[in-house]
Length: 87
Image (cartoon, rainbow, N blue to C red; front, side):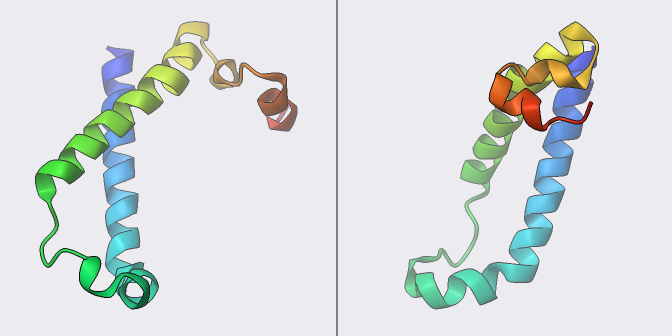
């Protein structure tokens, strides 16, 4: 059950943060560079597939080790990452 909650929260946070980012900065950052390459309407099926897979990847590679160990530092499995985590 914890994994499902972690997945749902990750999915909601990613979608909300990215939608705010795209709504506020899309034209200024991407409009001048991409111009006519941008689609007139967003492709919602592709976006949904991306977010579902992205949240699943975060849950599998980050959330599952942390939930299994019972602390958030468990996902920092390499010495390079653990060096920068707070003690």
